[in-house]
Structure formats: C-alpha cells, structure tokens
Length: 223
Image (cartoon, rainbow, N blue to C red):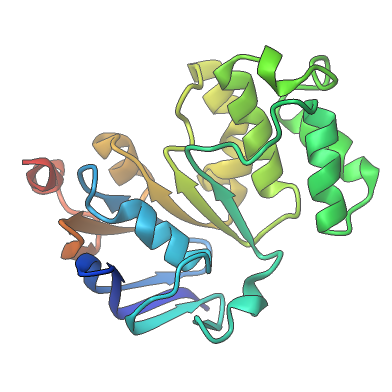
C-alpha cells in the first residue's frame, strides 16, 4: 500500500517559492529521509504532509487522503515531532499527555504506558519548565505516538537526546516502530542508514528522489 504520493508538489509564501516540482512515493512502513540545508523547504514539506499547509499546485496524497480536500481524513492518523514539543510548560508531563489523550478519546492507561515507554514515570508530575531539554523531547515523543498513528513526521527527532535516550525512543519513533516515517535531519550518514527512500531539496527544488544515493551526492545539497 502506498502511504505517501507526491507529484509536482508546489508551495509558495507570497511570491517566494518554498517547494517546487517535488515528486516522491513512499510505501507503508517505509522511511523517507528528507535532506537539505536550512531553508531548503524540508519543514514546509512536513507541514504540507501533516495537512497544516495547503499545497498550491501538484498532487499530494497521504494515507489515501487527497490534500487539501480530504485533510480531515488524517485526523488522529499522523504523529508530528518537531523543534517545538507542542506541550505546555506549566503543566506536568502526565497532565500534558492526559490532555492529548482526551483529544484522541483515549483512556488514562495509555498515558501511563507512554510515560513508561519513554522512561519518565518518576518525573511525570514535575512541570515541564523544570525538566531538561532531553526529558521534554522524550515527553514530546510520547505525545507524538500516544494515539498510535500509522504515519510519523519527524523533524530532527533526536535533538537534545543523549545516546541512551535516543536508544530508548527507538521502538517508538525509529525503524523498529514499523510505522511509515518521514525523517528530516542534518545527520546525513544516519539518515541514509535509516532511509528506504531519500528526497534531496535545495532552494525548495527537488535534486533527487528515490533510492538513497551516496553520502557525497547528499553533501552537495549543503554547498
């Protein structure tokens, strides 16, 4: 089953073209690595796939939903983990996850399972403002997978994590999760090792798409 299909995707901000001519195909359970320098359009692409931004031209189909007309079909089926944790700093980790559980009509046991999965049971009742960046990122990962989405959109998901924490999250957001993933990262070697499909962007324009290329080809995106 095809999870993501893009054909000539375009997105603009006023006169500025953020994405142009982007085409890719990702099957269910595969990982798409999106690579490119800052400003290449990577985060814009994630936001389009999440249904948060409307494409201006081309075709985008995500989990069988045509965007933007059928964006509503993605509700509860996508997990987003980006630079911002999308959590309330004055609330505790448990309170934050309980709030998101209510949004997805989940019971409290799912919250406790998620806290245990990211190793945050003992610090779950402390306000986020008192936790380290790595701990907040672990809670953000728990939020992203709380509702068991089939698709994960990941923007530098391991930022702020030490190796032990990154390993802890592997079953949730890594290849071991079995979910379809779109991974944005500047870790070229790591991304290529994880990817089934790679998409290279430069100035919003596609440079390559398909089978992951050699690292030397990817580094040309940053020059």
